[in-house]
Image (tube, rainbow, N blue to C red; front, side, top):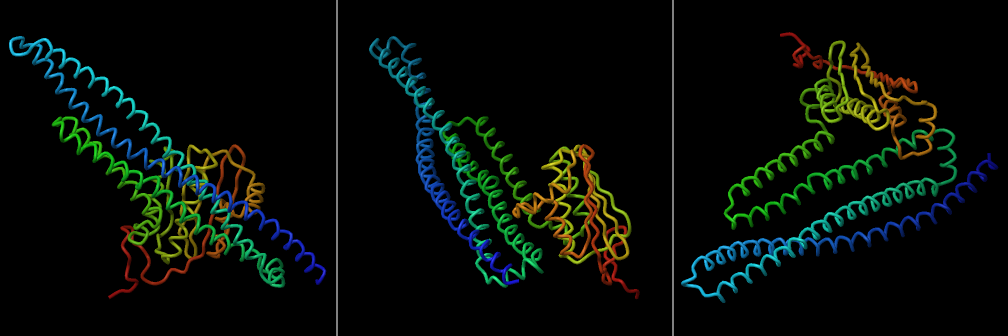
Length: 400
């Protein structure tokens, strides 16, 4: 046993040494990306300011050019009041304004393109920073485990390795979920609000032109963008915690999820339920919803299906979920082995561990070219007053 401990200690010390060096390298990469991000944001701010000024300049030149055209027409028609030098001066002024307007419109086009390019680069660098931060977090967590007491590490390896890894994965999953939510808000509602702010400024400047049709068209576009932003926020809220789960229960929430999945992906999705629906504990309903969500997302990402189905069976002492797709299928042994090596990837292994936390069972069947079937069975203990009528009402569980 002491010999094994010495061997494990040597392996751990070597791993710690390598990971410490790698950690410094990841930190340097992350800092370099942060510096680039600061530089890009600074340049983007200047481009945005210059773009706004150029737009204002184009608006003023456009207005002055229209007035100069009117002036040129006026002096050209009245030879009595205006002399040839007056006509020449009006013509030269209109021509110069036209040239200036063309130049600044070209500049506006260039600045808009530069702005879009910088925004795209900022987004890519932000993603690089996030990935570097995630890797650094993962390495810190692993180093904390490796740097602990050796006897404790040995006991983990021999008796409680799986439980510890689940805890580690839960921590990583929480961080990944926070980053995903932040990324969704940044790429969705935040970008929409920034665009709305710019469009409202443009609409405000249009008021000076008095062109009601253009202003009306701009306001219609703004209203459509507001609705789109509101829909994105609602989707984020639903992904965080579907309110229907607490109000209506698991089945109505799953029915809506399946319908939304079909509408969003254009993949045929079917939902069926069998047995007498029973309200479960809130935490269990949330866990089962997440399992279905994970199963459908896995099918969408990897299976390339044209059909996905969900069946839920309510039994006396358990609930069974059956998720099927007609996608490309896979070799289950190879996928689970790969997922165990890369502990940041949940997939089917993550679903299996979540089911184990619920003291349930999961059976995954897949044939290459024929699709995948995931059967999950979770034991339940339905308390009094939780049975549902066919109309979805909760019975009191007592008479009189």
